[in-house]
Image 1: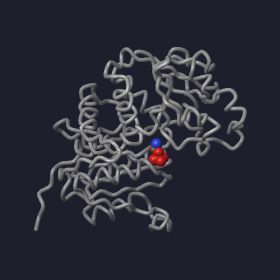
Image 2: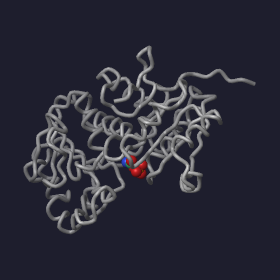
Image 3: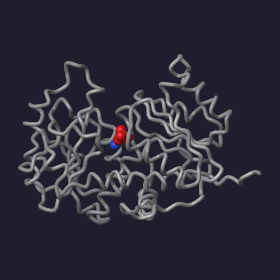
Image 4: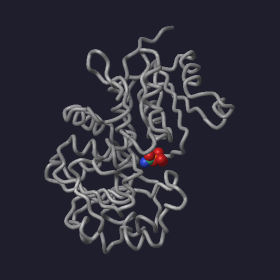
Length: 320
Ligand code: CP
């Protein structure tokens, strides 16, 4: 595993939440909370990233992560460039590293990368110049660290900071989910009371993964009395065609309906990282219902990414 830290111990890259201390996670959440603003409020902004140039390199589709990283960078005073990968020379066969070297020559200081291939983000981090930082915006099925942080922030806002008193159920396609893996890392790091993995056998993670999580193949058992229901999207793009579950059948067996949600605690919250497959993993009555925290998750995305960028960036002195 790549070392994400500088020699002084500070975070230089963010590729995984694995290895962050509880104090570091709590500091990031506290700083993110400072940046949270309600719809209609003037967003907070500062110039802590003035003089820094950020490149967003997404080779997989994204709405929330890309837009919120862009807003986060701009609200901290950075220059942000979104590389349209399909219109870039990557489409002519240029390698990721040659693209990175090109952008470094143009004085980029940070790269925010989403890629479908495991290991690409760490590979880039191993090859960039010493002053350059690399952040994951979602890596294959492996990791989505800022999603993990925004999920933890959402839970903290709704349930308080005593994670040890909470039972969280992660439900659905856990096997292919980077969201689930980062949620596990952050919730375990914050001392969650109980983490349940609720999935059909075919979508359970490999044995040995998610150590300490309790596994349930019945949503009726797995959802009973939980405080948080974290639904996951079926990751069709990471499955063989033949392995993709039939949508109607999946909804019947695992979809979060009002009846299934009623098994959880009455004040349980419902989360989903989005994009959602409505009518496959979640009923619209639940997704848009009073227990849903899904819009809060989106709102928290900018705040968390501001906190992360601020924690990683080294101030630059502007030159005239
Ligand atoms: N949750 C999430 O990563 O959404 P996007 O794919 O739209 O960025």
